[in-house]
Amino acid sequence: MMVSETLNLFKQKKLTFLLFIFIAFFIFLTVIVLMMYSKKNKIANSLKLSNKKFELLMIESNHRIKNNLQMILSMVDYSSDNEDEQQTKTLNKISSKIQTVGVLHKHLYADVHNQFVNIDTYFNEIIYLYREMNATNLVIKSSIIPIKIESERIVYFGLILNELLANTVEHHKADVKNVTIEITALKGQFQFLYTDGSPHLNANKVNKGGILLHQLMERIKAVNLTIDTHTGTYKFLFKDV
Image 1: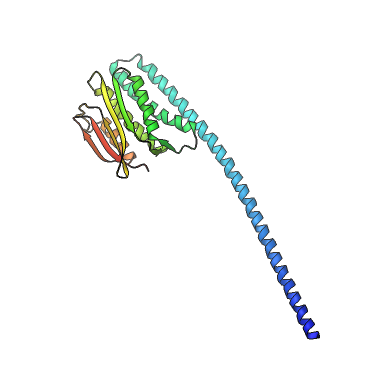
Image 2: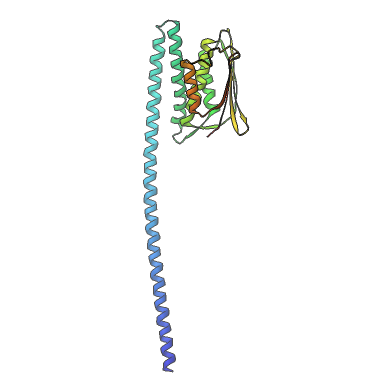
């Protein structure tokens, strides 16, 4: 009887000890989880604060850039009033490039998280600017599918379009200049097409305009560039990433 009671007492002590170990381990895990949760909250709050500061910084930065571009644009426009025709053309080309960058910053200022910009929206605003500047002698037909392009990259697309439109306005001899702009899907890629139906005999020559255009093409990783110098047609392929 004494042996049986001793065994029962031993088992009870063993169970009590195991229960104590389990409770201690449970408390230890609970403390660890609470510490991790508290640390996670602190990190989350810190990231939230940092993100807010970043948003304010980006908004202020884009606002300043937008204002500075507008100021430079006003200075260029003012300077063109007192220049001859050739200098006015040069200043107008500079002005259009500034506006092309300014349009992008308008989108970035509107939404600080806007990492991507729709190319159709961006191109249509540039086209609108050229229509406004050349209301009587420039007709632009466009068909551009919506593609999201990284904001750091899309400005180069805008500068390519600006360069082509500026060349048409400056060199096309017709009284009314007809331009077609298309971006279409093609076998997992996208095709850009620009044509104004006029000779571009200097398109393949090494000059400032040609060098700039090819450098911009490299920036957007364009491939299979073809230029028809007799019809002023430019084609190339690109991907959205």
